[in-house]
Length: 475
Image (tube, rainbow, N blue to C red; front, side, top):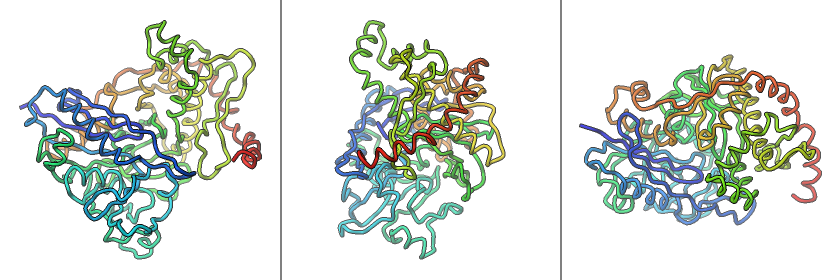
C-alpha cells in the first residue's frame, strides 16, 4: 500500500504544508503567508491575532484540497514550527495574548507573570500541538533559550534555582516528548479547521533549524549546512552537548540526544534580500516583465552578469543589529560610479556568503573539524547565482536538495520514523532525501574572494564608531 506523510513547516514568513509519498516526492502542497508582525513599541514583535493557527489551517486545507490520493493512506503528520517563540495560554489552551516572535526582546528575558489569566507558557510548537490535538504536550527539542530545560537529559530541570531564573513554575509547563513520539491525534475541531483526517497521529519533531537539517540529509559531520532563511545560520551535526563554545552553540537535533552545532548567524538575512528587491521597485518589475521573469529571477540573472566582488562594492548586513552591538546599522560601501542595481543585489548575496564563511570557519575551528561540501537550504538555494557565490567563497562544492521544503520533508521523516514506516532515521533519509544540482567552485573567483575576505572581516571594526556616534542622534 502506498503511504503518505504530511510535513507542517510553520516558518517566520509563511506556513507550508506538504504531503509526501514515502520516497520523498511532494504530491500536494499548501502555503499561506504570515501577516506582518505587530511592533507597537521598540523590542516588541508579536504575531497578530491568532495568525499562526490561521495560517496552519489555510495551508493544510490547500494541501488536502490538492491531494488526489486516499486520505486513509496518510500515516501521520510531523509538526515543525518557528523556534524561540513564546506563547501564553489560558487554562483552556487559547491565547491570552498574541504569540511573541523570536525577534521580541521579551523571549530572551525571564517570563514575568503579570496576567492572571495565563495558565500555561509554551513554544509555538506547543501551542499548535494543543490546537491540533487538545493535548498539553510538546517536543523537548524546541526549548532552547529562556526555558528550565536540561539540555543533557532533554527533560525539565528539577533545580529550583534554574526554575526561578526563567520565571516559569513547573505547573505552567507542557509535558515533554522526544522527536518521533506521538503528541496526540487530530481532534474533530482541528479537522474542521485544517481539513486533516480526524484521528490522524501528530508526531513531534524538533526546532525548525534541526528539522530543516534532517530534511537536507545532514547526517555527516563532513557536511556543512547553510540555511538561507530570515535568520541565516550554518550547522554541523554532532553527538556532544557543548556549552562553553565561543563561535557556536549546541542546539537540539531531530534525533533524540543528537545535537546540531550552530554557528553565529545573520539576523534578517534573506529578509534583507527581499527588502532590497522591493526597494528597487518599479524598474525591476518592468525589467522582469520585459524578460518574462519574476522580479527575483530578473535580479538573479542580472547579478550573475556582475563580476565577482562587485567591483569593490561591499555590504554590511546589520539591518537588524545584534544584541551585543545595538548601535550597528546596515551599509553599502564602495560606490564609485561603476555599480548599478544588480551590483547592489549581488553585493548582498556576497555579504551573506562571506559572513557565513567566517562564522562557519570559527565553528569548525573550535570543533577541530572541516567540511568537504556545503548543503544550502531555504528559498535562496533556488538561485543559481547564490549557489555559485557560496561555492566560490567556500572553495568546496555547494549542493541543494531536490525538494524546496526541507523543513517540511524533515517533519515528514520524523513522522515516518516515529510511526514505524522506516526502521530508523538513516533509512528514512536515504529513502526520502535526494540531492539536486551541484555547483563547483571557480578557482579564480575563489582566489578573489579569499583576498576580499581579509578586507571584509574588518569592516565593522571601522564602521562601529560611525554608527555608535550616529545612534546618539538617530537612535
